[in-house]
Every structure is written in structure tokens, then in C-alpha cells.
Length: 355
Image 1 (spheres, rainbow, N blue to C red):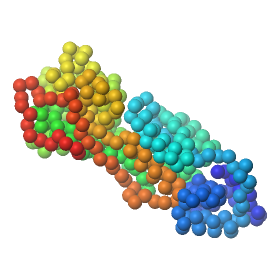
Image 2 (image 1 turned 30 degrees about the horizontal axis):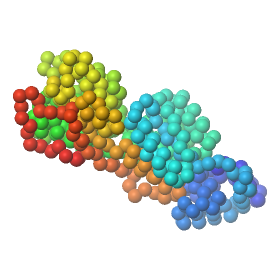
Image 3 (image 1 turned 45 degrees about the vertical axis):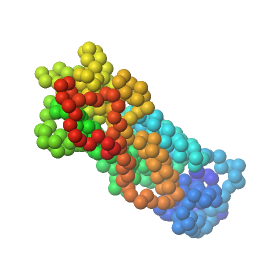
Image 4 (image 1 turned 135 degrees about the horizontal axis):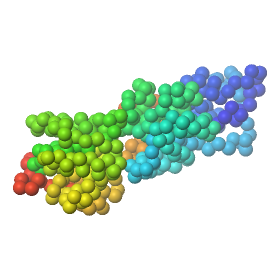
């Protein structure tokens, strides 16, 4: 809804944005009240209606109001099946609510982010879901001024305290993946880490460290190599581990795509998983159950994360507040054929079930 969707009958034209600011709600919430929709809490509705009466607003004819309800779903990149799972979850909830979804990628570039913000202002979005991306503080402030609610999925850093975030139990997942390899008898376990700027990457790394320390093993930093969640970095990381004087017998890759890259690096050397090196991933993307071999991985509920983010941002648009600003959904270890005891050893007792 824009300022032109209502007509002041009193002198001194006021914008819908100003009504929203005075009421402490989003612009779409004012639109819902003006249009008589039921998905607004009673207290918020009363506050907005009081302001509308005081400023003398009345609705224009229905034919003049043509904007559909929209959610903006913003990624840094869209070149991963991981993003598809998030989109699937958001779209399911949005479709059921009669809300459209606009998907954008800002590629970590400030120019792209500013262009996205210009487009968002033009289409008057009802809410924004930001996925593993970062916006400049000025753009966050513009969202606040516009009254557009924001939810962050897998934040890059620590978001504002009043910004709801959705994530998975990444630390527990990293712990479970490493404990599984320890239980199989592995003692030299490599890690292909994710981007350190992401909280989820750091949590998976910390879970790996915690499992080794709990087993009485020192963390060997030569067995930790960088990655960026893409298969190429998994290939490069595994190659670096294979080039060590004493390569690891197992590797935990902090994403499924990096795990698939690691398996390809083994193949290029004439080696195989799990006979020559066990490999564990993280995500449980649909294709990894069909990889060769099927991948042992940590399942994070990506579609459910998208669903919860959509429900949360829609509730914010109705003027409601979430019960908790930070929600973590559970992860689960899924054991397939890419892990086995190292050659010449027997499996040791240990936890290999859900995290």
C-alpha cells in the first residue's frame, strides 16, 4: 500500500508511513487495517484505527488498490541447492497465506543491495527474510524507517537484538558428525571448514573441536582447511589434506557440497570413500542420498527453517512479537555409506544417533 491508497478528508496530508511510525507498526500492517483484514492483533488494530480517525483518512475505492501482499526473500547467492530448500519452505507458507514471494540475490555487493532496497520501496513489501547475507547499517535503518519487518536466517554476524533469527543446532551437528567418526575408530579427523564470517560455520567448527577435546585428542590445526561451502573448496581442501605427510583417515566437511567435492578429490587420486577416507557432510541435501557412495551427513531442516522464517515475518507484519528472538531447529546425524572404520580397526562405542 502507498500513500495514494487513502485520501485525507482533513487538511494537512499525512503519509501512511507516518501513520505506521506513530503506531509503531509496519506500513503493511496499516494497509491491513485500512482494508479490513482480520490478520491484525486487536490492540494493534485499535491503535491504527485511532490514528486513522484522528488524521481523517478514508479508503479509496477497491479498484484503485491493486498491490498484492509480498514477501522479499534475499540471499547472498542463489547457486546452491541449499537455497532451493529454503525457498521451498518460504513459498509453502507464503502461498497458503495468499502472499507472493520475491527472491533476490545481492552477491555481497553494496551496489546490488542498494538496488534491491530501491526496488523494495517501490513494491512496498510486507516483510523481508534475509538469508546468510549482510546489509549495510544504513539499509537496515531504512527498513526500520519504512516499518518493514525483518527476519534473518543463518546470520553472518550478531544481528540487532530486536531482529528475530532462525538457525539450526550447528554446534550439536558438528559435535555429532565428529563423534560418529571417533566412534568408528578414527583419530586423525580433518575438517573442511565453512566461511568464518558465518555464525553457523563457526558453530560447526566449535562442535568439531569439542568432540575431539572430549575424546582427549588435541586439535591438530594442520588438519583444518578453509572452505566456502561450494564443491570446489571441498575438492581443494581434501586435496590439501591428502598432500599432508600423514593424511587424515576421515574428514568432516561443513557442507554437503564440500563433502561431494572431497569425494571427487579422492576419486581423482584413485582413492575411494569410505575405504581410503571416511567423509561426513552437513545439510542432507536431496541429492546426497544418490551420490556415490551415499553420503553420511548432518541433516538440518532447511525447508522448515524457511517455513518458520515466513511465519515469523508474517506475524511481525500483523504487529505481533515472537516468543523468542532466536530460534534453533534441531539437527540429526544420518548415517549412510561414506563412513566406515579405518582399515585394520574395529568400531568403538560412541554416540551416532540424532543430535
